[in-house]
Picture 1 (spheres, rainbow, N blue to C red):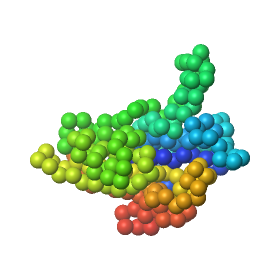
Picture 2 (tube, helix red, strand yellow; picture 1 turned 120 degrees about the horizontal axis):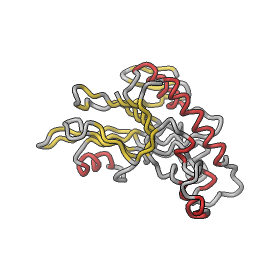
Picture 3 (cartoon, one colour; picture 1 turned 90 degrees about the horizontal axis):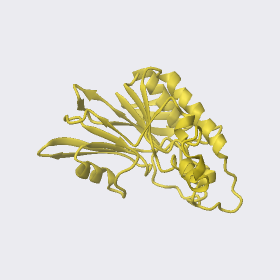
Amino acid sequence: IIMVISDQHFWPDVIPTMHRAFCLLAKKYKPFATIWNGDAFDGASISRFQSIGWEKKPGVTQEIQAVRERSHEVIKASPNSKRIWTAGNHDLRMESRLANVAPEFANMQGVHLKDHIPEFVPAWFITVNEGTDGHTEIRHREKGGIHAGYRNAIESGVSIVTGHDHRADVVPFDDRRGRRYGVRAGMGADSSRDPQFVHYLEGRKANWQSAFAVLTYKDGLLLYPELALRVDDDHFQFRGEVIKC
């Protein structure tokens, strides 16, 4: 089992429902790997978008502390799992800001986000069971648009798991080479009306799903990928059950 959660956009003093659910299932299933598939860090105060009015945003230090607290909860839930963090566009905000305004600090300890979450191995992407029928690539983003999962499955030539657009779906694709899947793992954050998003969305309720993916391999074959989906602040659904977390 490999568990993949994306786009948590962790905020100080907020523990999202699906993060709690992720930890609960990680403790239960003891997966081979727990993957943070980009944008655990939001970087609100160093966004390329200007502030709207006088909105209050947490500083980088506060956000990193929130990320560290949540990372320790994952480790506690499943201490023997491999832990990998693929880079998301928000994750890159910190290093991009420093590289542009203070290039002389390149390679100094602490200027990279990975320096602050050493328990997770940083990566651009992850390959699972390369060259087999279960060949899977896990990365923060690939194609965009409403049919991204379908396009990812067709054009990548392998099963592929992405985040980024905060949508959750599983698209199987069959051709003469067999079956592969385009999986969008949703977002780990709770809602499009969370403080990270509410202002630039002007309070709109976006078509986003709070969810994560659970990948199960049997003799190297990727079985139909499963999604855990948020129900409310204290519950999520998975495998035909509504589970309290």
